[in-house]
Image 1: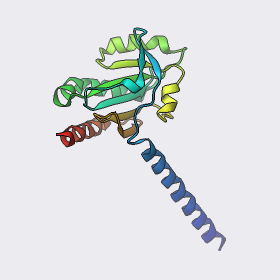
Image 2: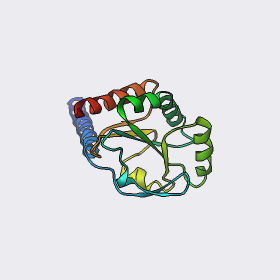
Image 3: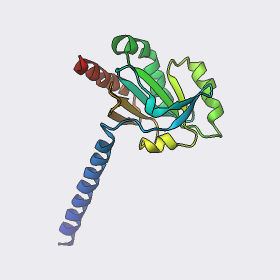
Length: 175
């Protein structure tokens, strides 16, 4: 009898936690980008709520120089980024969460990879927290109306193709 009670309690906790996690993930979807003031790599202040892409999709990717999967993801996307832009007009904004200790590595790394992305710096993690990012890499897809429509955490080779499929869906559904 104790085993049955324990099994039922475990199942209840599993489904409750799983349901909560799904609701939490859905809760961010269809929301707009929160307003934060961040600096770009040349020291200009950028209001995140005003990030836009002329009605086209935008990718916001949280990363750090010390995060190997982050760099792998952004480098993989870089290899196809010009084609993605030509085909869909998508724009990528890479938000570095490097703190004061590692922030000096951001610009040299970006320059060495010749990334064409807009780079924003979030050294205090304010934007990261506002977007619900717990760990990196964490990638969001924003539709042409400024609504968050997709979110993906972590990176495995090939995830960039799934992301691009979502970008294509947005572009095709807009036409």
